[in-house]
Length: 435
Image 1 (cartoon, rainbow, N blue to C red):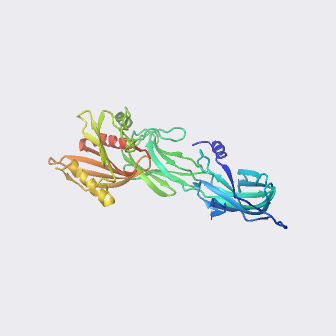
Image 2: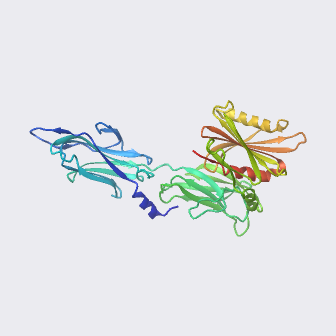
Image 3: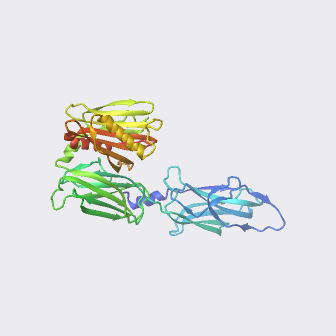
């Protein structure tokens, strides 16, 4: 995470000021009385009169502009004005603008006069959350002021990545689901903001389903940029973690966000990494179908795009490898595109029948999961039995994204489950979408 002094330096560059003046009307008369209305904070302005539109005093942090406008009567064009925008808690001035109402005009004017602050072109947000005040001065005399609030945002988790290594900012290296018993296992969590007082926790479970570690964390101060935090699990007293299937649950403000499965295996890191040493990436569909995905070493692929669907099949070059991976994209104009959960389940059942038409299948095991980038999807597992009573496994992951249905499918014989799982989930961990 960046240092605090960098955040303060960055904040000072966020605000720009734009002054918009209404069309003032000259007035004459024997008796001249200057008057000032109340300063009004609003979402927008009438573009002809600069009167307030949608007055309000509370704004989300995502707000793009805030306006202040005041009604003036019988002021001279050569008189001076000043708008001061500042944080009312710290008195830090975030914007200030001064000048003459209308240069060269000595008569009296009336109308609405306004000031607007914007998010700069290369900025991220208008101002940090807090209490603010806008002051209006006429000839250096305070005439009116109005307060407003920029509310604290509701932060959200963007993604969770399991890995065995992070950098100094807690960003993960390559995603992993299989580890060695003596490795440190990190659950790296990316959030869009860190809000002071928020609680994030990881709850780790052993192969027997027992909680072996809880690692809670309360955010000490707010930070309004994408950030990573990391929790870790490691062996105790130099005794490696036992082999088996583990899981970690992630909680945000005491509400469960999701759970992530991983396993401890002997020489697991070497075994898993050996499947993806060449870092193969399928990118041929990145422009038209908006995704890329990794695939194992010594695999090749066939790519078959069509008008309402597309398929990329990953096939091992070595005939001794007995599993296949496939990504199918179903467009909305395809008659098989499912509109609800029941139709999706039926489509997954049909795929299972297509893969093993002569086999007997069990009921599907359905679970809710998330990709590395936080995208939710449904996983369907089928176990198929042939005439010789041999078992085969089928996994389908149904991912709705970008008005398409992406189906990642894997199929293998039971004797290859271990390597197949590493290949299937290793590829899925490298799936990325281009918005």
